[in-house]
Image 1: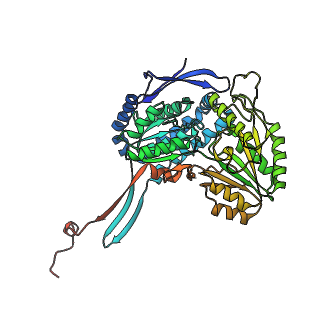
Image 2: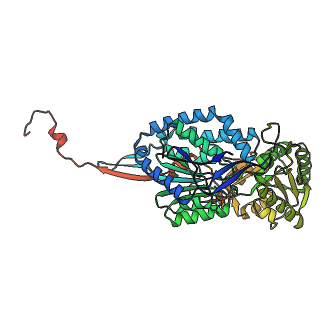
Image 3: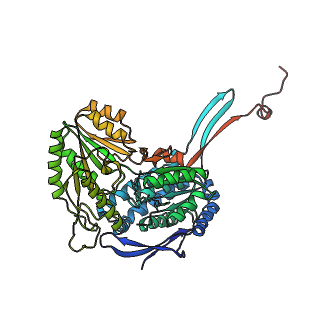
Amino acid sequence: MNTIGHLINGKTVANDPRQQDVINPSTNEVIGRVSLASQATVEEAIAAAEAAYPAWRDLPPIKRARIMYRFKDLLEQNADKICEMITREHGKVLNDAMGELQRGIENVEYACGVPELLKGEHSKNVGPAIDSWSEFQPLGVVAGITPFNFPAMVPLWMWPMAVACGNAFILKPSERDPSSALYIAELGIEAGIPAGILNVVNGDKEAVDTLLTDKRVQAVSFVGSTPIAEYVYTTGNANGKRVQAFGGAKNHAIIMPDADLDNAVSALMGAAYGSCGERCMAISVAVAVGDDTAEALIEKLKERIAALKIGDGMDNSNDMGPVVTRQQLEKIEGYIAKGIEEGAELVVDGRGLKVPGFEDGNYLGACLFDKVKEGMVIHAEEIFGPVLCVMRVDSMQEAMEIIDAHEYGNGTCLFTRDGEAARYFSDNIKVGMVGINVPLPVPVAFHSFGGWKRSLFGDLHAYGPDAVRFYTKRKTVTQRWPASGVREGAQFNFPSNG
Ligand code: NAD
C-alpha cells in the first residue's frame, strides 16, 4: 500500500500514528494511506522553515527566480505523471487535469519575474536633499491550506510566489487527494529550493489548527468551503496572523434574450458540468430573461446533456468523471431530493447512473432543474456537483438583484450581444470576477483571483500582483544625508580664501 507522508526539511517522513485512506472515486478502491500530521510533526516543519529562512531571504531575487525557471521545466517534463495522480485521486478527466496544471504553471511563470515584481517604489527629493522609497520584505514562515478540487493548481497559486518573494512555506494539501501536491513540492526541491524552505504536511484539523496558532507562522492563505474559511480567518487573525481565506460560491450566468444561445449553451455545459461541477467558479445557476429564452435554453441543454459522455477520468474521450467521494455524492443527491420537495422541476435526472466496468464508482449524471426560485435551498447553498439550476425572470435588473442578494460573490457572467448592457452589468454587479460571454472568468496569472462577500475573507486576492503584496510587508525608508564635509575634503581645487 502506497503511504503518502510529509516533506519536511527536504526529507519524506511518515511516522504519525494517524492515517486515512485515499480512494479512487472511479472505483472506490483504496489506493493509498495518507499520514495525518500531529501537532509535533507540524512543529517540526515550522522549525525547519524558521531555520532555513534567513539565508533564503538574503539570496538575491534573481537567484530565487532561476530556481523557479528550473522548477517550471520540471513541471512540464513531468506533466503526464502529475495529471495521472490528480485523476486517480480526484476523478477529473486527464485533459481537465492538464488544464488545471497548465494554469498552475502560469503562476510559476509569473513568479519567475520576481526581481521585477519586488523592485519597490522610489521618490527622489521628497524634501530638500531627502529621498524616500518603499521596499517589500518577506514575512518569514508562511502557510497554505488547500482544497481537494484543484489539488495541483491551488498550491501553485500560493507557494511559488511566496517562496520567490523570500519566505519559507508550509503547505497543508487536501487529505482526499494529496499525492500531486507532494510530488510537485519534491520537484521544487529538485529544482534547487533549499530543504526547509518548502515543506508539505499532510493532515486534517489538527495540522490546520497548529498552523493557525503557532506564533512562528506569520501568514496563512486558505482555500476551501466557506464555514472553514471563516474559521481559519478568525482563528488566524486572533493569533496575530495575516490571513486570506477563499470560500465557496454560487455563480450565476444571466442569459439575455439577444444572446447567441448556441454559444451560451456550449459555454454553460462546460461551466456547469466540467469537473463534475466541482469548481469554485462553476456556473450552477442560469438566470434566463424571459420565458421564451428559458424554454429555448432548457430544450438545447437537454439535447446536449443527452450527448454527454461520463466515465473514468483516465479515458480522455469522457466529458465528466465521478464525484470525489461517496459522501459528497450522497450530499448532492440530498440536495436534488430537497429541490424536488421544494417545488423545482427536475427536467434531467442524472441519479442512479452506472458506468460499465466502474459500477462501484461515485457516478452521477448531469442534472438540470427548471423553475428554481429564491429561497429554495438548492439556490441558497453551494451544491458542488453536476447540478444546474435554471431561474426565470422578466428583466436583467431582476436577475442582477438575485445575484446581488446572494451571500456568495465569486464569479458571474452575462450572455448578450449588447455592449451597453454588458458594461452596465460589469460596472454594477456585486461579484468579484465577471465574464461577458465568458462563462468561467478565472483571471490569468498576471491578474489576481478573488470573490466578494462570503466567498473571500481578507483584503488581498490570490496570485498575481496581490500575491506579491500578501507575501511581503512594506517598509518605507526616508533618507537624508546632511553635508558632512567628506565630499568637500576630497576636492582637489587649489585651496584659497577667495
Ligand atoms: P474544505 O473546506 O472541506 O477543505 C479545505 C481544507 O480545509 C482542506 O485542506 C481540509 O483538510 C481543511 N479542513 C477541513 N475541515 C477542517 C476543519 N474542521 N478545521 C480545519 N481545517 C479543515 O473544502 P473542500 O471540500 O476540500 O473544497 C471545496 C470547497 O472549496 C468548495 O466550497 C469550493 O467552492 C471551495 N473552493 C473555493 C475556491 C476559491 O478560490 N474561492 C477555490 C477552490 C475551492
